[in-house]
Image 1 (tube, helix red, strand yellow):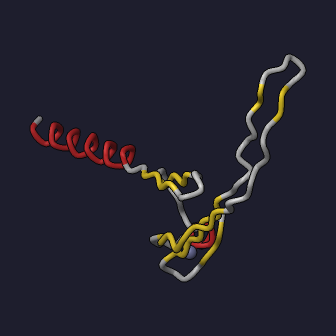
Image 2 (spheres, protein in one colour):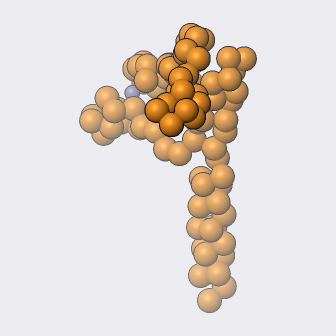
Length: 99
Ligand SMILES: [Zn+2]
């Protein structure tokens, strides 16, 4: 009974750690990068290897996205964000990629 209780606490606390591990970074151009959840190296996964993944950096375009426009009813429609974030990753087995 006691062992079951401890196991339940361990399962619960590891779930909370995993679900709480979301971090957002805000750039000077207003773009936001949110990291969290779960990520695996697809090359390692395909070969049955285990690896950790380092986040090497992010590039963010800071383009002007236009002024928006006024629609047929006369209401202003703001421009949608045309900027993109590209984040580079490298796994502990040496694979690297950008997404
Ligand atoms: Zn890998």
